[in-house]
Each structure stands twice: as C-alpha cells, then as structure tokens.
Image (cartoon, rainbow, N blue to C red; front, side, top):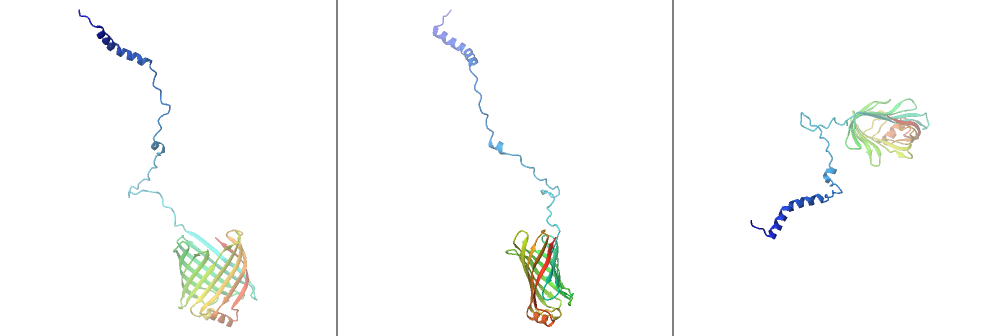
Length: 283
C-alpha cells in the first residue's frame, strides 16, 4: 500500500475542514448595525398635493362648465331732492323752490326724470323745467344723455330736444352740460356745477351755480338772446342721516342783457339775494 507524504496530507486536511470552519466562524460574528435614520423622502413626495378636479365639461358643446353667470345687470332706483327750500327776503313774501332728479336702470343704461321750478310770492309758477332723458355711460365718470325737455309753468309752454353730458369732473366737481333745440327753432344751453366741501363728516358746504343761454329772444317767457340768467347759491347742510340733511344758505339770481330789460319792463327786479332754509334728501 502506497504511503502519502506529510505535505500532501496537510493540504488535504485544510481543504476538507475550510467550509466547516467558515460556517462556525459565521455563528460567532455580530450582526450588522441597523441605520440610525431612515432615508428621507424625495422633495417631490413632500410638496406634491393632489390637483383639484377639473370642472365638468358640458356634454352638448364640449366646453368647460363654470356654473351660473354672475349677475351684473341689476336694476337700481335712485332719487335725490337737492333743493327743497324757502327763499326769504327780496322785499316781499317768501318764495319756494325745488330741484330734484331720479333715475332707474343699470350701471350702464338709465332713464332720468329731472324737475325744477320756483313758486313766486304772487302764487305764479316760474322757471318750470322738466326733463325726461335716456343716458348711456361713456366712461367711468360720465354719462351721455338725450331726451326731451318741457317748460311747464304759468307762462306759455315750450318743448325741446335735449342732448348733453353729466358726471364727475376732476377734483370731484358735479357737472351737467346740456344743449337744446326747441319746437320753434330756438337753441339753448344750460350749465350746472356744484361741489361738496366736507368741513366735518356731517357738516358740508356746497357752492352751486346754474347758467342759461338762448339763441333767440322769447318775450312771452321773459327770455332774451345771449346769457339770460345765473342762479348761484352757497348752502351749509348738516347730515343728521346720510339720506336727510337740513340746510341754510344764501341764493343769488341775476338776469343779463335782453332778459334783464324784459324783466324790468314787466315791473320785476332783474336780480336779488335771498336767505334759504330747506332740506336735502335722497333714496
């Protein structure tokens, strides 16, 4: 029987025992330590939010349905009695004057009713000017107005076509400027301006001026050609409520040129200054 050399036996012994030794060594090794911090989520996972659902599409047109439209054509009503006053002085009995206007419509289109007049101390009605107008907003602060004017008082009646503008001028001046053509071919114009000066939140000083011009004389209505009349006033009101304010003031009226001559021939004064006491109200 052949004999093996010692070196050969050592190599064979190592080859046979190596797997068992490796397995035994693995039983004594400490387990790998777990990570102290978990992996942070990606930024997109933190910031991402579920998107809102898209509006449903209209089955008939295939367009997106955003619900009922916003109501922006509501009908409003507004009225203001700017002057409702007694005028004292002038060497006679008191006179009574009114000046007011009202409208109904939307922010863009309105129907206006304007009226003013003077009840004189002898009971006669003078300066009766009444207008029915349609207005259309042409800018944020200005309306274009067109319609009819009727002079209805104790004198012979006159009827006019009217075209003008009304609105808020720079520095918050209220302005009305209107041109007229009468049924007798006369031309006329009327310019009104006023301003509210707030002395306090409730005490308000209002200067106002009204000018009238005519192209031809109309003696039956005591009107001459040119600048016929200026009616100006300065009124101090106290707003007990925003919609109601008593006031006191002074009013000045003056006729010019041919109109002054016609008025004097009728035995009346061409100018006077009067104390006014009245109320201003709106709704």
